[in-house]
Image (cartoon, rainbow, N blue to C red; front, side):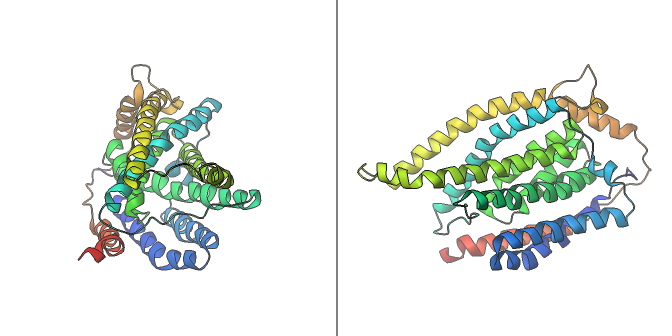
Length: 325
């Protein structure tokens, strides 16, 4: 069954393919020339603009599809703390992948430069936090998750999160974005507002930028203090780092689950007999089934996703593992 008020799955698959190719062949080149300028071009011209054009040309209501509904102050506060506790879990998941890949490859992860002064820090927040938070949420949570929710809300959540992880085209930065995609998707479902997932995305990226900025400012002092301290073996350092991150991730996940479960649900989704994340997902499924639908079954065309998935596998194989042959 296909809802007329949401994009078709096949059409968003094609959108995902086109935007992915634009990112790989245009955005990556722009970012190599000038990272911040390239990110602006990539996010606004190659991700946001095609998505908005796609929705408008097909006659969809942006407010309805993207769920441009207001957040309450209580939801705002909850989302802040949700992202505080989601961040350590995402960092640990990426650490696992980095450790696994590093055990067989000498390739190092590519990271965003950390600003060394306050003005550059503010510019970095706009480019690295606010810009992707808006543009990527419109595409992934607002459009892709909405379309795939026609299969079921849970499937829409999972598929869009996996696609969000693949879209980073970096094996070392795969598990973290998938996890964050799930968290942001749940926020969208419970608040019934894209502003919720946009806020969460911005906060996550801002935490990363701020943490890097603070660490960089104190690096010189740390170097001076640790100059005479005996160095540990690299394997021991990695093990201790993993243990600390694991402990922090586990404790954070418990708090995160409680916060997500108790995140105030927007009135459109409220029902006293249903509570918690799973109940909200089921409730949204029920609401979809009660809405206007047409008796047509869509045969899903998976080839666009297979193409992007193949490019992801090939590019990461060449970068990380080709030297092993």
